Amino acid sequence: MHAVPVAMSLVASFMSAITVLGTPAEIYIYGTMFCYFGLTYSIVMWFSAEFYMPIFYRLLITSAYEYLEIRFKSKVVRILGCITFIAQTTLYMGIAIYAPSLALNAVTGFTLWGSVLTCGLVCTFYTTIGGMKAVLWTDVFQLSIMVAGFLAVIIQGSINVGGWGRVMEICIEGERIEFDNFSFDPTIRHTFWTICVGGLFTWLAIYGINQSQVQRYLTCRTERDARIAIYLNIPGLLLILALAACSGLVMYATYYDCDPYDAGYVDATDQLMPYFVMDILSFLPGLPGLFVSCMFSGALSTVSSGLNSLAAVTGEDIIRQYWKNIPEARYTLITKCLALCYGLFCVFMAWISSMMGDVLQAALSIFGMVGGPLLGLFSLAMFFPWANAKGAIVGLLTGLAMSFWVGIGGFLYPPYVDKPPRVTTNCTIPSNSSTTVAYSIGTTTEAPLPQDSYPPIAEFYSISYLYYGAVAWLTVIFIGLIVSFITGPTKPEELDPRTICPVVNKCCCFLPSGLRKKGYCGVQYIEREEDEDEKKSPEKQYPDDVDMVTVEVQADMDKVDGIKNDLEMNGKANSVAVQHESGL
Image 1 (cartoon, rainbow, N blue to C red):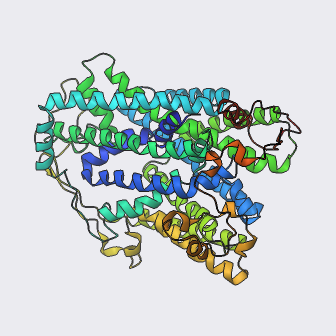
Image 2 (cartoon, rainbow, N blue to C red):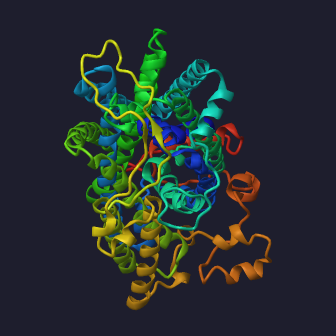
Image 3 (cartoon, one colour):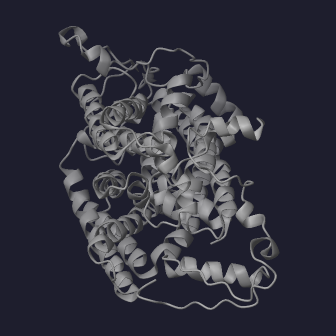
């Protein structure tokens, strides 16, 4: 695949319906501090493109967790990482379908389970039939629909209020414009530091090592294209963030004197955006439907990427481990069946989510809490050559225990979160309403929770949810290294240098070669220019008298065909023949 569709797919895969519903509501309720995530996205993409992606790409692997076995020479580490990924992804996919279906049902009266089944089954069908290319191209289309839906809301909402200048005036008066919170207090929900530091670990766990994203990198024809796709992801993410934030500001400017949530028009803040759309766009046939398409496009892109990744991980990390000589055609059929089964299970998880009630928000936080330990595991493997398999296993389990301890403690003893005031002074019951809405007239402010009864340890639980991943990452690295040194550290000179990231070459490229080698910590790197494998001409790779070169690879046929086409189109070979042997 080319870099552009892969970049758009990277944007769409985790810009889900939760983004479409949650980000505007976040800006409406709390203000614009959330927008600092734009800076975080840029830092995350640099780390992903320069440190994590090259390791996966050069090893020609399908599953990110295959790397763990290569690095630690342990199937246990690989399977633990695989199981953790499967658990978090199936839960997240169920929520990604249930959340927009619930909002749509509450506001428009659409059948809840009709929405869940339609979304789940349609997505399962095209992912099962079309594979990764279907996921990539549908993500491109779905991202376009998301952008169109946001634009419709922003334009019509601004017109109704009196222009964008009026929107900003109202938001400034309502204390929704805030960019100056630089407090170092880790208990404040959103500050510059919690978003840029804590958010770095949260999103790096998604874009750096998550199988859904790694699988996209590997569809690119060259490592250079994969790097370009990651960097092209930045403007896409910034665009979605800006559109979602502007939608939230327009929504506040519309309801600044009558908050629908406090007035009882909606039951949850996630329903604010659909309510707003039906309120301002219902007079224009088709536009509410455009937003519905926008919302479910986010759900489809998330679920399709998750299904494909789950099928790939299960196939590579479990099936191939027990059936090593499986024919390629049969393996392809099995992975398609796996995608189908996971899709049906995803619908089942949506049903489980319906019984969680207020735990829905907790489930979303669990997704972040699991990502931190996984990021710590991969970071331990890539950046610390002394780490061994025992340290990796103990570090991962300790990191999971730590993150869940802090996260669950935060749910049981929720900290007080300061919110700007909301007003209901000008609310009226709609004339077509058949129910009685009870609410208090005036200004709503959040009263502090009765925290006097909290145990002393609750102070630790009150840290911002964005630091959950950072706490888990530090725990995995610290415990993993201690256990590794106690049980006998790995000798760096014995490692495959492709499995260790040469950080010193990235961060200290200006140093002489001799000084850089001291920073290799004993790893036997082969000196090479950046992307040298792509810049070399055939004459430099092989002697002039070589007529034919035979290369044996074990990879998906799509990748083999891509290599073949690239060699022929770029004049690196007169002809390329592909011979299949035992599924290779």
